[in-house]
Image 1 (spheres, rainbow, N blue to C red):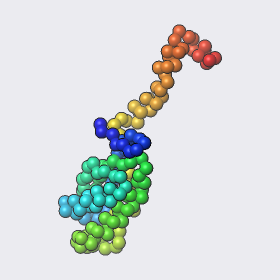
Image 2: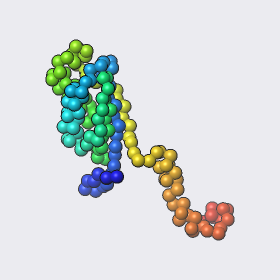
Image 3: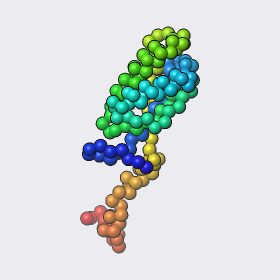
Image 4: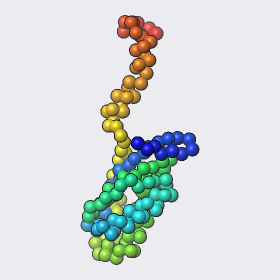
Length: 149
């Protein structure tokens, strides 16, 4: 696992983003998806966002990306949706046959954090912090004696 770094921290922040076309219109093909991906990478550089994986269906895209802790994710998503909508409609006039109004993307989106461990594993890890020290310090004592310390 390769961690990202900046001046004062080490981190690994992965996100899964799903963007859907307006009215779930079937406008994506390989060429439009490839161009949308290029725009994502280009705009992402300004927000310290790195594309990890991209895939599409006819009416939505799945994007896996990495970000910095100080990245304003919602601001980036809005910037991407705005720029890509404008550029894709300009470069692919056939899109206007299905999406005649200004918006290319649905207003909503799905953004999920991803990680290496399930939430239950992390919860148990956090709950167990300090337990080893507590057990060693209280070895041989009765439970009621621990409370009086």
